[in-house]
Length: 415
Ligand code: GUN
Ligand code: FE
Image (cartoon, rainbow, N blue to C red; front, side, top):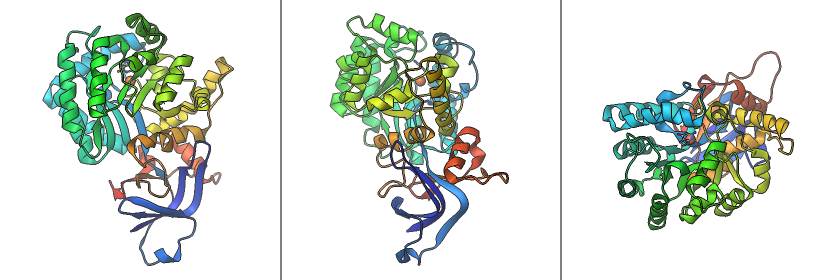
């Protein structure tokens, strides 16, 4: 049994960010037993681990991140999606056939993810099986709950970054078989996006989804170009989501729709029906995609929303900054398109913690029965104006960085 003392902030629901000043979290075997503002007598015999005035918050979830693009973060940000992919990203991803390269990048990526306080993630790898296996093994060894995908691309891709349909499906099945019984880092189907996937490959991935009960991640209506290109490639489909429905890829959980910036009514209905997640990646959106998810209005449809760093279209690995940017962008969206409502800080924090935690199990909050996956943040108070813990969490998201994170816990273990 461990008892942690400090200021405690966590989401109870989409609208409610709970704050306990000078509270206690009781943890047994890595699992939260209760949160109290006064320590109950029955626990008085245990030693208290005291974080004083620092704030204990849940660790973050990154629902859309490309591990192989980690070396490219913060560069090539002055072009749009199509050029960014073809000029920078595809040539970089081709390097993941090189063992020394992928081992050094993926080890650094996983360490930096944890350093930034992300302990649950949905991750793209590349088309390469050995590199993808290595990425899974690094996450599994660290105990990070994750879904990782070996990428499928079988058309309209450079010849140095493409597989035949059959090889891609066969390699994907091998990848699933190798990792399906992992404890933490599990496989997920990962057709890159509609423009680089044939209908045949999507159908065959749909069969794998049924055979192994695995979910699917992809990019959905991410830019005006992609939305139109998807409809051109799949002439029988009225919208991006319908392509994946027809292929049988919406039947298994989780379904992760990165970006979801220009959804039609039917896209929204299909995502809602399958219980999937729309992931806003605010930096990526401004850097290379040039569109803003209608987050507030989507929340009101009942869709599950989440936040992603989308490294390296996004340029910063810490999800806390994306929480701030999601709020910021919702205001710009609402300014230019007045039927869009803004989102609150509480809503954005929820999206990055409790709201998207469900796909990994009981993570993202400090309710009883949840994993104690937590960050201790500090050095946020200044002497000019005493701020309550909730506002210090907001300050962390807007102006903090890794140095604000003083300790990290994964299932009760300090890491
Ligand atoms: N669409 C297809 N591939 C990618 C990618 O790597 N990043 C982003 N942001 N969008 C994509
Ligand atoms: Fe992406």
